[in-house]
Length: 229
Image (cartoon, rainbow, N blue to C red; front, side, top):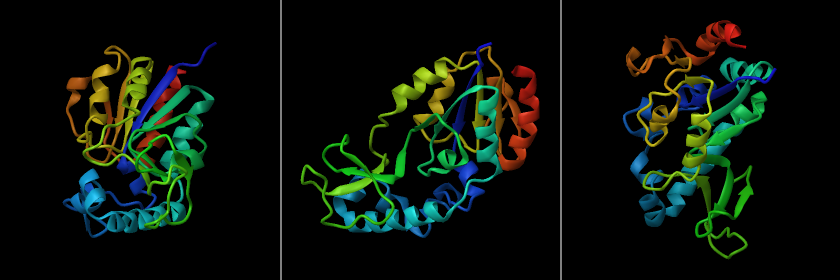
C-alpha cells in the first residue's frame, strides 16, 4: 500500500535544542548582532565584510551542532510515511539526522553562491572572504535568503503543501512570511498537528496541539501518528 504523504514545516525551535540560537529569542539581536546589519540585502550592499563575518561564525556553530531527538524522530517517520520537510532553518541537521526530502526555504549556510548569479552555488565548510569570487568573477556570498529578498523555493513548498495527507508543524512561531502562509494551501480536512513550546494560534486551524519542546513533543506525536499509517 502506498504511504501517506506527511508534510512537515519546521522552524528555529527544533534547531534551538541543538544549541543554535534564533534572533527571535533576543529582541532582534542574533548572537549580539543587529539583524538589520547582517541579514538583509541592504546590509550586504552596505557592509559585506560584516555580513560575511556573521555568517562565517554561524557556519562554525552549525558544523559543531548535532541533530537532536526531534530531528531523528522526523527521520524515523520515513519508515511509515512519505515525508517531505519544508524548513525555515539554514542548517543541515535534518540531513544529518537522515531525512531524505528537504526543502530549505531560507537557503543553506553550508553553501555559497555568486552575488550576481543565484544558480552558481557551491558547497562550503570554511569561511567566505572579501575577494573570494565565483566562476563568473563576482563576489561569493552565503546561499541565504535575506530579508528584502524573494523566497525562490516558496512555489515548490506550496505545491508540496497541497499534496499533504497529514500536515505537521514543529518548532516555529509562524510569524515569518511567506513561510507562515503555507497554512493556506494545506487541504482543509486532513489531520494537522503542531509541536511547539508556545503554540502561536488557537484551534481555529483545526490543529492537534502539543505544547512542548520539539524533542519531547515529537516523542508524543510519533505515538499518535501510528493510527494514520
